[in-house]
Length: 235
Image (tube, rainbow, N blue to C red; front, side, top):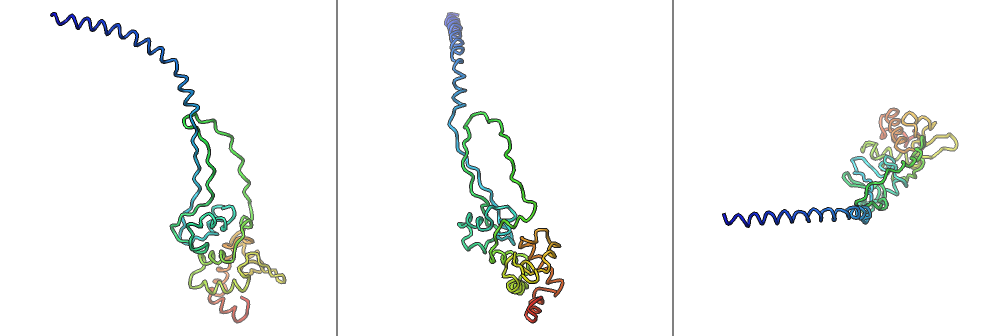
């Protein structure tokens, strides 16, 4: 029984100790807004947007990728951005290679822990041309030949290439001043190629597909068309 006295005394002392503890809690709650303010003014972090990329597929070439993904500057800009990857030059790319489609966007400052700002009004989108989009791109003879190689069967390509070389020199806009024949295959009139695509004036792929269809339907194949051309110097 004598041991109970220290227990009672200890309980009383604990009760008295709780009172100042609560007072301390009330006093320390006041600086909370200061902590919140410190969080709002925390240093900002710089974040850079990752550039868009594309993985080369079988049959691709730089011109086709540049046109399909609206790369500003065409295949030349695409090659410039990916020189470290395309070590064999612009005319030799391989499936599986990852290409950068645009330069990395500049870093933007984002508050580390501040509340996100209200979204800004969306910027007006640039007008999308409704016709002749390929006219904005300059094609080299080598790039057009690479496009043709992805469309024309391999065993017919040599003959196809001979005809196009003689007819237009691989110039998409080649025009015969006498007859008005137009394009890679010198279609007469050039508007015939509209059966393959409305962009026939400027798109080498459209012209290549039309030329291949023409050679197949009229002569049976580019090989047969080239044999005829060598005899008559026209086809």
